[in-house]
Image: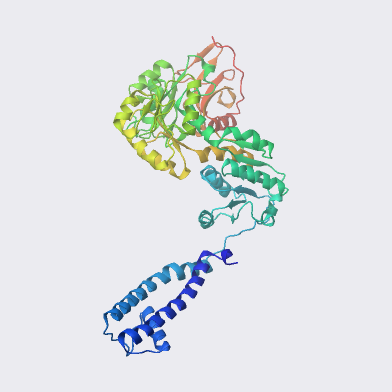
Length: 552
């Protein structure tokens, strides 16, 4: 019975029992000391009165003089005990009790679950997804076993239930009517959750987030609808961002053969491009190069016409003939695509990144604290000697796959200072830290929450799955409403964010357009941009996809 009480209540009951006992003991000792040591007898009631006055620090009446040293020491000790109890009782015993009495109680029973998604345990993997649920006003409940974390989640406005899977089937019974269940604990706890939910009659989709791929098959057998390994998907996202062999520069680029190339330029503050509008730079007219957009803080933004400003620190994505791109390279620093890919942090994510890179034929250099098979450089990524050994300045990219975001911030700043021109890709544990990594100098930062959120949003929010990065794509389209118009000087085209990079006329592919050039109705138009900007282009110009002929 006593063990079921709250901790603060047990403390208060202990205090209520201990205080009278302390008064009785001190009062009795005082009575005996005054009688046998001081030679001035006191009654038991007088002893209790002295003890209560001492412990409460309210002072004494006429009984305030002691001649024997032993009694003086006893009284002094009692006075210090009283002071100690005053400062101890309120913060440790009284305040926690009253805080618990007045704070809002955490629910310990699931609410009606019709149309509601249940998340078992909170963690970094579902942070981004929960933000999306809040944005779309989609109902959800978090079943959290950790009391402190449950309170924090409740204070953030989330619908939280505190409880244990093994405690009381009645409390979890409403889950049978839930829209879906997502398990986000350790692999063993996820397995227990899957079994419990199925035992309670839940027949809907149940998605498990696993740490190890080995658990996927057993989890499916015991009742999971699907099992995802976000850490491994995150590793694939990091690898694809670092290697063009895994993720080509742009989908559909092969349609143009060697007629058009794509390049990325890092715009430093000292570059003549920095802070300039495209209308002032006139890269199309002067060099035949089309700016598709720019990466800034991990977000790709398509250029929206001549007024678009080239931001300092951005990575500019440009398309044009190889000769034209070489000319623009002299205005800005090109992103090097040669040299090894350096990876720091050889944990589960790091292992997956290296596996994918080596399968793609990339040369990898691995840095880690501890010596282990597969580690090339043992040392601290913050030390210049370690970066020297790993040839970071010669790298085509650096990937930080560290397991602590604070450490990643320091490592990002150190690598950026040591090798300012090398693309820096950072793995992030918690999504809120992404902006901090960008401020520290990262070019791209990807969190496990982004990866898992995008996977689950496709299943739970009926949203089209969106890639970790905004892909750039080439499409071969009919002329449509573009017929009779200039492929460059066109306000309607600027509004879409897509760019016409070439026109196929008969057997000729035209890349550079002279003044007065207009598109004919029988031309095929090669358009480049993000997936969304291409969709806007097709709606704006009523253009249809045209199957390509063999290019000569």
